Structures are given as C-alpha cells and as structure tokens.
Image (cartoon, rainbow, N blue to C red; front, side, top):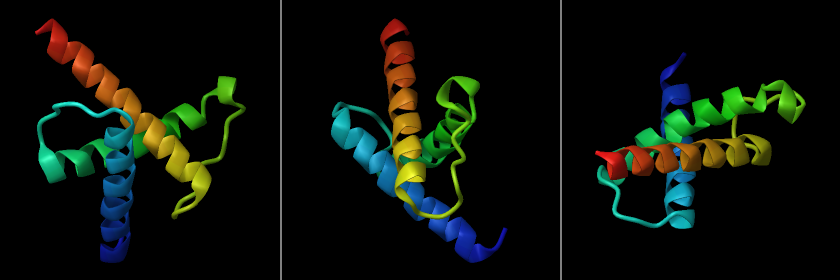
Length: 90
C-alpha cells in the first residue's frame, strides 16, 4: 500500500465519519481524529457487511464511488450506535 493510498483512505474515512456524525449528532469524544478513525473503521465494517449473503454480496470497489461511500457511512453509523450503547451502559 503506497503513501497516496493511505492518504486517500484517511480522507475517505474523514468524509464518511463526518457524514455519519452529521446524521447522528451527539457528544462523542475524539474530535477530528475520532471522526477519521470512525470513518476508516466504518468503511471496513461497511465492506464486510456488503459482502454478506443477505445483501447479495455487493462488491464494494476500491476508490471513491457512491456504493463504497454509502457502505462506509453505514458502517460508521453502526460504530456510533455501538459506541453510544456501550457508553450508556458503562
């Protein structure tokens, strides 16, 4: 994985995480870095979900496209929901 790929994943993750936080506003810690982490991990989670048989094994392609972006935002929202559930129980 080259330097530009890493930078593109970080930018993609930030945008996906920012959209997820806009759709689910709240007091989540982490700020800018937290948004990037949620977005990058959310993209990974979204990719795994997209490959599940119940979703018809959607092929999430590398690079910036609408399908990949929607799965990344969906994965980020799932992470935010899990975080808030765990935080609320603690």
